[in-house]
Amino acid sequence: MTKPPDFYIYRGEGNQAVLGTLRACRKLATAEQSARTVMLVTIDPPIAAGTLPAGVSTNVVGLSEHGPKPLEQLKPGDTGSAEMWEVYEFGQGKLGVGLSPTIARVNVYKARPALDSKGNIMAVPAAARAAIASIIRALESDPGKGKT
Image (cartoon, rainbow, N blue to C red):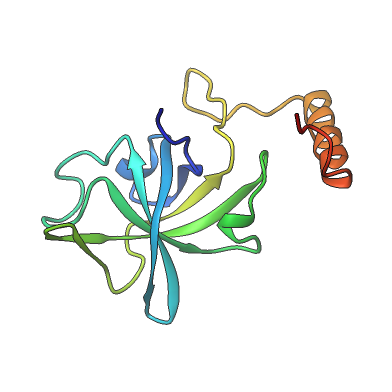
């Protein structure tokens, strides 16, 4: 069984060839770069070959916090923001993070957003959002609920 994505990235500001595709992200590790913590994540689907400079990974990128809510604290329905860093492949499984976040600033979604036929994110109906919020509040207030 494949591990589910930790979150999704889609759209934002920067390299539109990278941002125009909804990508599932799975956390690999963290690295320190320029006094910032950069989360290394695999992305699916990978970035198209030739979009990034030679030597830059197309299936692993770095993400650093940008915005009020840390990526690892996002809950279903939450949206965050991150800066995307180039990750260089040095061979033998060794990766290196670029000097600064040069690819883009991306939107981060804890749950997979629904897209319409034009690639726009469809808004969740207010009634559905309220029902989900109610369930989450109930589960958070009584940790024993939902266990079998």
